Image 1: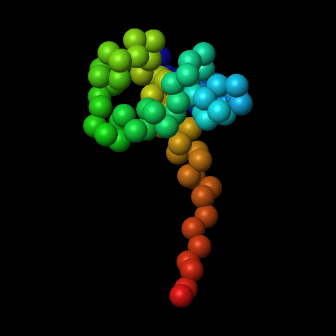
Image 2: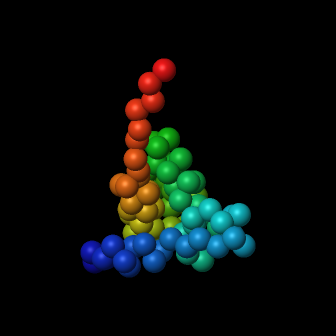
Image 3: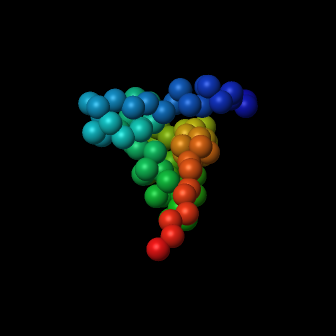
Length: 81
């Protein structure tokens, strides 16, 4: 079942009491950063799921969506030397 942007982003929570406020998958201490590092390092969904059985494919999709929205409005300025 395809989830809406809002439904996916609801999977990501930020709380100063969990992982020092880093974005994490709701109800867990598994951070978006950890998922990025795993996927960026070549881990498959199955490998991540083997390590974290509670992880759903929609959680990974939510992490990617969350990250894409962070950089979507990023501004890059040219600095001349």
